Amino acid sequence: MQKSRGNIQLSSYDDIFGGVPDRAKETADEQGKEHVKDIPLSELYPFKNHPFKVLDDEEMDKTVESIKEYGVLTPAIVRPRDEGGYEIVSGHRRCHASEIAGKETLPCIVRELDDDAATILMVDANMQRETLLPSEKAWAYKMKLDAVRRKAGRPSLENSGQLDPNLKGTRSNAIVADEAGESVKQVQRYIRLTNLLPEILDLVDSKQIGFNPAVELSYLDEDEQRRLLEAMDFSQSTPSLSQAQRIKKMSQEEGITQEAMNVIMSEEKKSDVDRVTLKNDVLKKYFPKSYTPKQMEDTIVKLLDQWQKKRMREQQLQ
Image 1 (tube, rainbow, N blue to C red):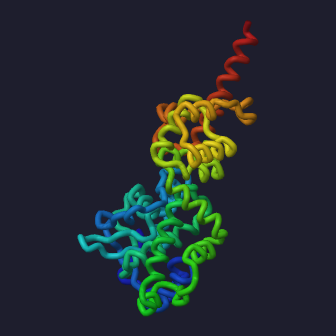
Image 2: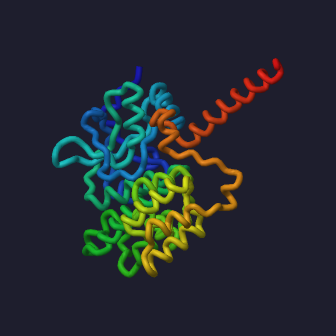
Image 3: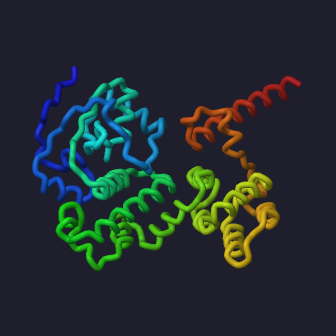
């Protein structure tokens, strides 16, 4: 039987958060010892516009099993909501896994945070994950950059509590890039992806459209992106970097028609000669919604192996 935590005092931030960035650690040190409180799952709400996906994948299964056996070892960070309950700042996956595991409460640290400080902490905590989708990085960088810019524009006295007091004179995007371990240019390129339609960004996440072509396509307006989707459907292909660059150039110089997009997308690419492409919409009819592209691929390969063995047996009997 799991022991009740009560109001346990934790003197070390590392005991609670492990690898969360130093700036968040400094904030905890300033606030002193914090308390872990078991909060009913029914009172917890996801962070507004949370950019990180909570998937029922293999990693989630492992988290659920760990929680069933040991409980939640790392408390979530939450903040009070004006309308009641608490907003999760860090711990969305733990909350979801706890629900699956049949838990009724989640150990949390309640912290008073303004919107920008909460956004920065939420992004920093989640960026520690090993694998992140392009869409997750794109929206996380954008949210953090917007928050850092707003913080940098406030009086230094207000900045000193939750952000580096030396923000003045420092470019906000350089701060975001440095803390993410990326170049400023790469952070800017990721943020460009937030200009893509959700349907196109999904194709980037599933690796059907490469990162570099996606950055080029992000310069198209919404109508042009919708025409691109029609052209992709017409040609049953996705744009290469060269095609994306030409589409962008035509868009910026003279505008691009549906016919022109269809022509460009219908070109045979070297990489297409030995490749068979199955559209997401086609595959989704045969797989659970929770399946990742890798799970779909593994299942298809397994079924093809079985089909090949069956054909070989039939041929031997002839």
